[in-house]
Length: 383
Image 1 (cartoon, rainbow, N blue to C red):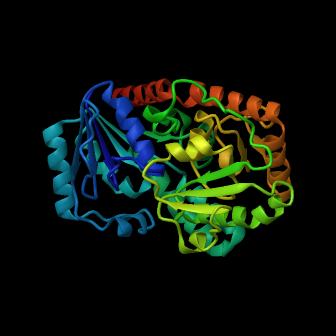
Image 2: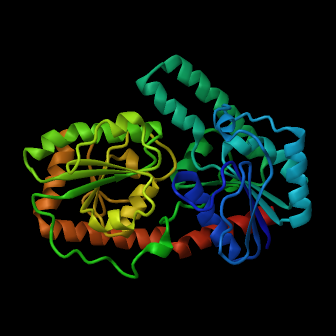
Image 3: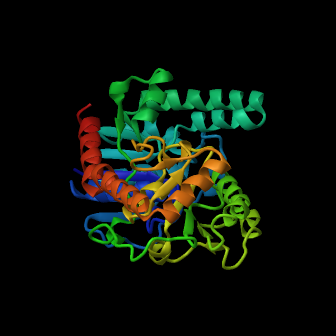
């Protein structure tokens, strides 16, 4: 089977969010046959993975694409280049990354047996979440406009991929038939860098735990979470005076950088490798209040044997059990209590991280992703 993935940004090398999902799905599809990664932006480095090619098919400004309210008007040269790539590659299936590429669904239907719209998030739901905190009337109207685009695109595509059963249910609530929606979960990012087994922790953190929040620090919900954690630290220091917070990720917003206190709150912009950071972290903290899809940051922490303290929003769709695989917290007091419990009780720390590791490997490892992609591709082509 030959699969073409059309994306906004080049997804190799993958760093965070959308490119991690696009790359994991492309690698899984390459086990079934040749893969072409075609992006609106110029392609990055040539991947070494066997059977994966890269190409660009537009000179569009991708910032304009992402800010287009998901009704992107593609120029005639862009459409001609897209058709040319398809004519040369002759894909059995075309996977279109999320809602910004919704207007490519109909042209793609003329060029391939199966056309898949991969909704990384349910964008209308994300906007509806904003209505809770600001400008409720305007956000609701905007959510309605985006929902109409989602319904039209999912009707036109052969099938739709989502990250979780929760997102599938959200689409069902919008009138999208469940049989046309396929769950392909977000997988553990950068699996090639993982140790072969649960990493060994030489000693419990005690009163000097290293806390980690790893995310795209220029993305609004993550900026909010990072600022919230910085405000939490003075309260935590009363109980754990040696605690250190690491905020690591792509393009930190100036407001995040301004919270740095060297040695106590460290901001690490766009680190070349997360491995050394993950190796030293004792507890992953994720106070997200908004978001969609499922969180790579939670899966990566779990796969590295780092126990997670998070809001329910930060781990929704992952099937985690409070007290067994994760500790859920909503308030500052709950976060402090759970962090102290993990830092000071070695048995709790070990039990939680082991359970989380086993859950991540069983449900979000490479074999689970391959099974989801394979079933999704075959279903789309046969439909």
